[in-house]
Amino acid sequence: MEINVAGNAYSRRNFLTLVAGTSAAATLAACGSSGPSTGGGGGDSKGAASYWYLTGQPNEGIRTATVERFNKANPDTKIAANAFANDAYKQKIKTALGAGQAPTLIWGWGGGGLKSWVEAGQVEDLTSWFTENAAVKDKLFPTSFGAATIDKKIYAMPAETVAPIVLFYNKEVFEKAGAQPPQSWADIMNLVEVFKAKKIAPFSLAGQSRWTNMMWLEFLFDRIGGSEVFQAVFEGEKDAWSNPSAKLALTKMQELIKADGFIKGFSSIAADANADQALLYTGKAAMMVHGTWTYGSMASDGGDFVKSGKLGYMNFPPVEGGKGDPSDTVGNPGQYLAISSKATAEQKDIAKKFFQTAVLDDTEIKSFLDTGSVPIVKGTETQIAASKDPEFLKFVYDTSVNAKVFAQSWDQALSPTAAETLLDTIAKFFQLNIGPDQFITTMNGVIGK
Image (cartoon, rainbow, N blue to C red; front, side, top):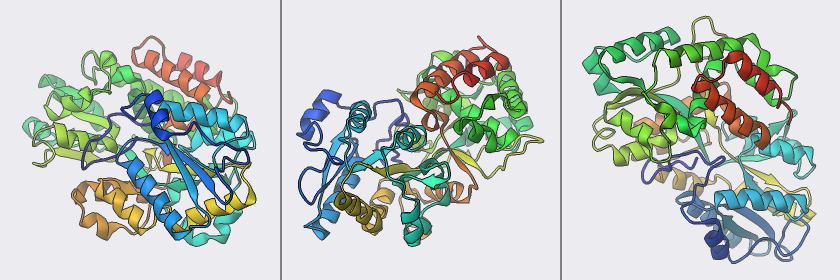
């Protein structure tokens, strides 16, 4: 999801959804080009590399400005940029890669999509380049490289901003109930009864959107079994979903659902209109597990809720007896730039110079911070302290940089085929139409697909 806590925040993450308000056709027309006119990595002219990325402000403007600064500093080796709406982009990049006509620089989400490109030999192995350019790697959050790494090799440059998923809570509702934020899974289950007795939904959840339910499972799997449980799924290990920790996580999840831990009718609420956030800031729900990208819309739409300090936030608590590290988190560890293996040597050199001198340079870092986002760069505490939302941005920074593992959201980490099965299965699971065993069997069936 594009994050903007200072202005108009998007209500959904940018995987499997359209983040731009314009139609795909309008966006393509506005770009003035349907893609590269030549092969060899999509270079538009001699001495130029090409770069495709997403529309949608404010980040589109930041990306464009970075390219313009690079081109001004390198007039003989320019980058030609094109921006596309989310769904149109994903289709175009898939087609271009298949035809050997991809742009030199490929913007993406890492994880499952990147893995498919690697397996098809469509992107460059950057492992040795990062070894030779240690300063570039060392300034970034170490956890941002997880979704860029396939079979222990780095295939993309982590870029842009970070967005962990956290537990939000309404401080005013807690104070009136005489309750404290949960420090364990047992606390969560106890708070369910506390708030139900007050006729307040314990948790807000826009379950119709499917991926919102997924965030709960991501944390339970991690807190109970550790990061290696889902890592085995990502690596395609046979029957990886059959891990006993997965069964326990699924069982606990349905215990919470059956205890009416979520707002009544949650499976018919969609996240698109931010209804789940409204339930939190209006006090109809006490808590919400969601991405930090929701902060901006709660600040702009929730009256004085955020401004007056009524919004609380914390990392997801541990589960008793669990193997997971409670400092770990899940969500969006960054965005990713890969280099087409079909690009010319000259175009690849331009792309690497762009990585070295332009991506997350001082100007780009400031631009992201000015829009209320946290760039994946270490040592920005001073700039964060001077920002509009210093307390929240410091929390996002600390959560991200202190996590030993920042796991990528499952629907991004998996292949599109497996991700769709996952989301469909999660929806059935949260509606109690299937139990843990059927969930595990279904998901084992799409490992590696």
